[in-house]
Length: 135
Image (cartoon, rainbow, N blue to C red; front, top):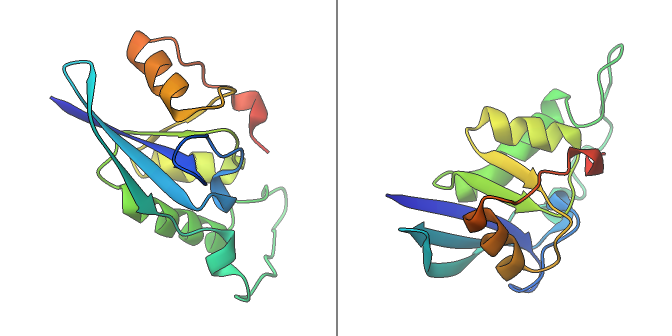
């Protein structure tokens, strides 16, 4: 069985600290606990959404990133990795985290710096999801 993992990156080597601002997804395909391929995919992000209507109305106690406009943006960002089971990032908003889960993608927020480190930790079963880094 193949597993695909997407990692947000600006350079194909390091893990971006911010899901929304990252330029690319590095998509790693794993077969029989071994990496069999790696590809770079363009990622929509804050830069592409700049200039669009930025005023979000928050009703009551609705947290940042959970409004309809943000949820739509998160869904659009996730379209490029709809074939992936996992997304690894160095940080993201709580709304993006929830949107990914709703899309069937398991988000993992890591303190590791490189894609290779994170993939190795994932394969070893010890990649920690640092949800305290959500904002």
